[in-house]
Image 1: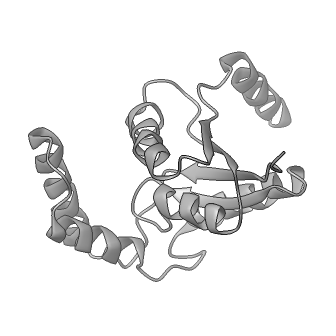
Image 2: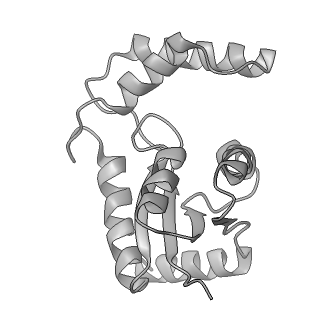
Length: 169
């Protein structure tokens, strides 16, 4: 019997780093909108812009979102024992979900669970993009089980928010 090697990927939205020219973001979003409207694959120009923005130099001061997600990731990683672990971002920041899946598979993961920090229903990243990416990856890695820990139990989300409110009451 083959051994199971667990992997977990935490996906966050991704933030635009301070200092990144706004015209790059505007152009990227325009190209992305045109691609989605046409149902076309990503153009070389959009891919290059996306990569440039994702690779933009970051510090906790220029990208507090990345710093915050990394702090949550460190706590989650500590809770997961010996599972392989990676972080990924939907946009503006590296690595992508595809890159993190590939990284964990190279490290030996055979069962990968993807979780997101986006808890509420209705978001395009959490409800559309992440499932589409996983559906695209599954045929490329037939020996790997890719699971998406979605949707969230909204009662548990509300309980967590209740505890947060109580901390400040």
